[in-house]
Image (tube, rainbow, N blue to C red; front, side, top):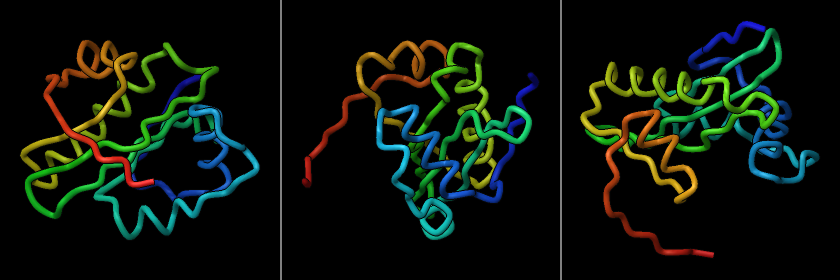
Length: 133
């Protein structure tokens, strides 16, 4: 089935919550208020659709200036390996560039380095993290 990439699509909280749960191993019954969060905090968001079904998602948060940040990159486990994630990141990158951002940041775990560095073109950098909970 053909995948269609759509920026700033109307978000169905339950559908995006189910995708997020499938991709990250959460409880698919819990619904996060994605639409409200995205409207308040995101520069943009991008969905990948297989027909009407959401197969992938990424959001771009930003500081209102030069820096944008990829968050919540998720592809349905049944659709991974098809290039959906790469297409999502490319679309998000184009949106951040069009908004005038100069830098696009992403944090990732070591097992995702191949995806972000080799497939999406990010340069690895040192970063810091403070756990707050």
